Length: 275
Ligand code: BT5
Image 1 (cartoon, protein in one colour):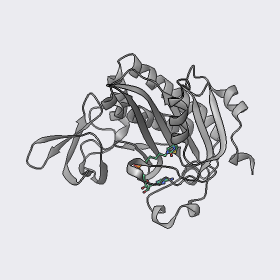
Image 2 (cartoon, rainbow, N blue to C red; image 1 turned 60 degrees about the horizontal axis):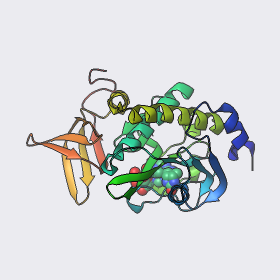
Image 3 (cartoon, protein in one colour; image 1 turned 90 degrees about the vertical axis):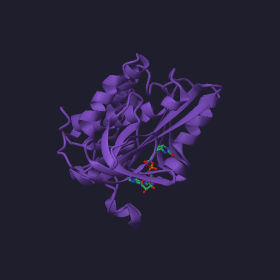
Image 4 (tube, rainbow, N blue to C red; image 1 turned 60 degrees about the vertical axis):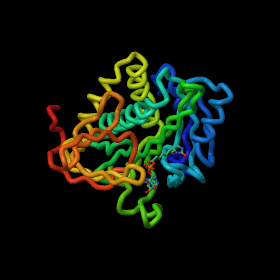
């Protein structure tokens, strides 16, 4: 394995400036899915902030049982979180994760990544990162949540399966150089912690404001697959819980809690919306 294909947990300890996130961690060469292992550990009481990292995943997961392509050279990890929020608010974790990813890429590489609601981070319209939040519920409460990040860092575009080649990218391809995955991981954990603290202090509105600044998506005409239904309209805003408010063609407002944005027709320029 070359240097860039193996993360050194000791280097992470040295560079990490967070208080909780990533301060305990398990680093694996390969796992089926870091989210699955993190869920298992969380249900046996593993503490908040623990990171489960794998150099590659054989059965990386996306939402709704989709596959996540996870070769060596990526950043595939999951965090165990125990926030005091209602289970239906788990979407907030996805949003704070995506804001942290965009900020980190901006600060480290000067890249202007965008968020496609709810969980995709794109560069030049191609997906560079996906986020998967899975929640475990006890009674009416959230017992724990696992926040999984998949960042395409240092691998060849040619290694993507053919069906992903037009829609996916890696940081290495965008920057035309390798990135330090250690520094990327440390900064991402630090930024995720800043957002997570805001959530815990009841200041999710601040994360939403950040989200609005980097979404590049509000004001656009969107088509969204919401279960069996396809919704078309203008993406107006997010509500206080992170649900997407769409103005339908007949003028009615519709809230989408989860779904896939299948097309976006930009009707405003990035950075508008008063920000
Ligand atoms: C996601 O789902 O985007 C969530 C991905 C989360 C992956 C992380 S890796 C660490 C942790 N452990 C796991 O097992 N998962 C998490 P979704 O929005 O459903 O998007 C999935 C779709 O993205 C797939 O159906 C493909 O079309 C596409 N895709 C798969 N692998 C990709 C990749 N590496 N880069 C870009 N697009 C990909």
